[in-house]
Every structure is written in structure tokens, then in C-alpha cells.
Length: 204
Length: 204
Image (cartoon, rainbow over all chains, first blue to last red; front, side):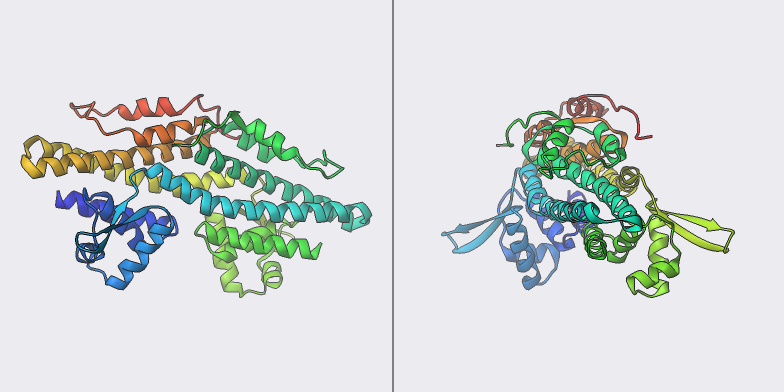
């Protein structure tokens, strides 16, 4: 049993590392996830042979990500910690907070670039016009990919259905300025193309 | 135009960083992606004001990930580089090579742990039996989450359709040893539950 638990703790440490978190964060989550009772910082320090300061910092990070909850027990006036039992809820919280924030920043920036290029290409001539058109095609390609990723994350968080066949089709579409007025509610259209069903409501 | 290009290069640098790659890798990909013609290492060194050694190392990494192609031109006996134009193909290659490899390692390890626990719980009594059962429930919960992630990646790479409503349902299922013989082709069943359509063939 001890062996299984150690293997598990190591594994989640590696997973955390892989996803750009701290290794200790993964190990701490694993310790709490395999504990039927909430644990104190000291319990975790003992288990992982790490310093209290380090454990404390990483537990607080886990709390911020919604992966761990703090429980104050009046009986011994200590803070206890337990793993969020609904893992999917925790994971979708991370996707929402971290991955979606990133993808939306990129999309906003790509939208701005596309607008600037569309503006520039109205007056550009010769080589400059060719370059503007080339930039537009390329940015539009990437914008579609990120829109797809963003829709995907949204569906994951909300629990919808998605067709991955669309991703490869979308990324092969050439850019055409099908929206010369610049109103750009193309986004909604693409979204409808990708999403097969409507969101079926969040996990709880 | 120069401004748009700089913004784009910075952006892809940040994206690369976010996904656990080197920032320079993202910037190099961006430079090539926005270039209508293949470029030499020297062109890229000039553009990014980085050292030739650094550029060379990161271009080779991009080649290994299938994001950049090398072209040898006999005319001036130099190596040129161009961005893989099918971004989706490149991204699905990364997901296959990196994300799926990781998720499959974890699943294999969780499968082993579940087997060990099932074996142990046959002979365990008292507190030991309770702990084994608790471990089993928790590991099964995580195993289902990673199976879901793995199926998701597989669908993304192959272009299928998936129902995200299943993810939250799956992660809430309690562990039941519905497979006491240990043949465990439950995997296939879960997969069928999650996948709405069959893969529609790869992107090209």
C-alpha cells in the first residue's frame, strides 16, 4: 500500500511539472487526495520531507487554483487541508483561469493585428499590398486555430460537444475578407460550425 | 506593418513559453510564419538579434517538432528554413508526441496501481481493507479523468467528435469493481460513451 501511494505521489509530481506547475504542488495534492482525513501542514511536511515554508507556499497556490480547501478545526485550533474531491471541477477551473485567459489574450491581439492590416491594405500599393495580404492570410489562419482552441476549452468547462474534424478543415481555409464592413461576427458562425450540440450545463 | 510583425513575434514567444517551449522557439516560428520566402539562419539572427548558436539550437528543436522544414538551395549552397504551413498538422503532431505520451504513461501507472490494490484488497482485513478500498476509489476517479484526456487528444489528432458532458459525469462516478476478473476492457466501453462519432480520418 505504501508503495502504491509513493508511486502515485511521484506521478502527480511529474504531471504537475508537465503542466507548468511546481512538482511539490502535484505531490501535495496527491498526499491529500489519498488521505481519507484532512491533514495539517505538519502532516504533509513529515510525509514529503520538505520544509514547512515550501509546503505552506505550495498549499496556498493549490488553494488559489481551487484544488485544495482549508478547514479550520476548533477542537485543536489548527488549519487542516483536503483535496477538492470533484477533480473535474478543479481541472475545468484551471482551464478557465489559465488556458482560456491565455487564448483570449492571443485572440484579442490577433484581432487587433487583423484590423490594422485590413486598414493598411486599403491604402497600400505594390509590394506593401502583397505583404499586407500575406500577413492577413497567415494571421487569419492562426486566429482560427486559437478560436478553435478557445471554443474547445469553453466546451470542456461547460460540458458541450465538439467536432474535431472541423479543426483540420478550418486551419486549411484560406483567408477571405468576407466581412469588409469589419463587424466580424464571423466568430459566432465559426463557433456554430464547430459545436455540434449546445452546452449541457456545467458539472454541478 | 513592422509593428504588426513585432507584436506577432512577441505574442508567439509568449505562447511558446506558456506551452513549456522556449520563448525563442515561438519567436523563430513567428518570423518564418510571416515570411513569404524561406530564410537562412543569418536572416533570423539579424531579425531577432539573438546569437547564431541559440538560433541554430532552437531551429533544430522546431524541426524535430515538425513545425519547421529545412530546404537546401544549391544556388547559394545554403540551408533555408520555412514554417510548416499546415499549423493544425504541426499542433496535432505535438499533442501526439508530447501530451499523449505523458497521459499514456500516467494511465499505465494508474492501471498498475489499481491492479496492485485489487490484489491487496483480496487478502486485506480491517483498516488495511478500508484504506485499499479508499485508494481504489480515488485512483479510479483519476484514471477516468486521464482516460478522458487521452481520448480527447486522440480525437483531436484524428479528427473525431466528443461529448464534454461525459467528462463531468465520468469524474463523478464512484469506483465499483465491475470487472472482478480483471480483464478490464472497460476502457473500450468508456471510450464509446465519450465518443459520439467515429474518427473521420486524419487531416490529410
